[in-house]
Image 1 (tube, rainbow, N blue to C red):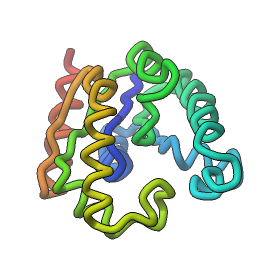
Image 2: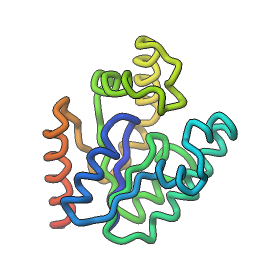
Image 3: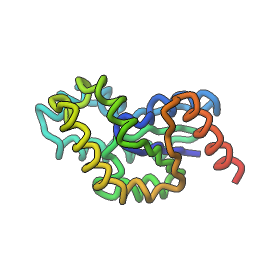
Length: 173
């Protein structure tokens, strides 16, 4: 089974995905890391040198490569479901789980992690909060197409348990 974790940057897709994969004895793929490995550049370099449009094509290309995997948890990039037919690819080939986090939680997490994220690296706190609200509003139409939605809590351990419970439900059905 393929389990795709989707949601806004900073919602915990990679962090929780690794833990759930380990619990299930599944492999784990972080789509951004897959892109970086294969392109031999980090995401910020790809954005700076080749632009967002090129990055979105790479994202689509490497997402397509994940569909042949078995027993794998895939953490997508925050924008992955929102471009091309990526959300349809995700839903046709696996179970999608939307990790929803409030603007408050995302702001706290992203404030300390901006240097790795080219789209927010230069934003101050107020600008970052507005950016999160605007993008969450735009992207929610894609995120809400997920098979399952988990509303994140501030406590990461609680989120881990919520996701594990949801995955057990998926496996039991």
